[in-house]
Length: 181
Image 1 (cartoon, rainbow, N blue to C red):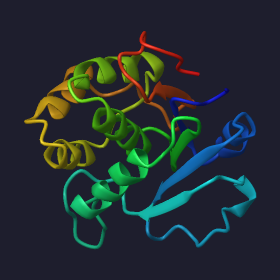
Image 2 (image 1 turned 90 degrees about the vertical axis):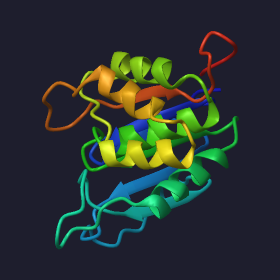
Image 3 (image 1 turned 180 degrees about the vertical axis):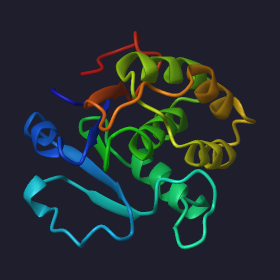
Image 4 (image 1 turned 120 degrees about the vertical axis):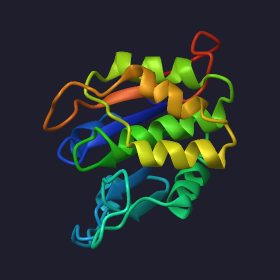
């Protein structure tokens, strides 16, 4: 099945193109609180979760930072996506918030593969720069003892880009152990 066992990461502007390639998917939307209310029903996803917070890595006056509740919701949503459906995550640019969520969900489902997942994330998306605060929160919630933080730091900042190209990240690890879509 196209998309099964995969996390698809997209920018908002590429969402139509990515959804057209998927048969069955869950949609995780990560946009700023000031993004206008939108009817997402045209995407015909199985489940949809919209979380509103700014793409910041430390609290700033007047902005909403990702927090433990946001990251718990991300992890829970990813945990409840069935293997026969794809998981599509998007934010504004498809670089920071969505990459952090994809990384956190993959790590949540695959303890011990934090470094491998980070390396594969970089291989599949040269521009991905996972939001460090989101990664730190997920590392804490998943009790990974800093392994997720270290792995993301080891791949460094992605190449400069205004918007990332859509990419797919395996949901099941090790990636050579079965069908990955």
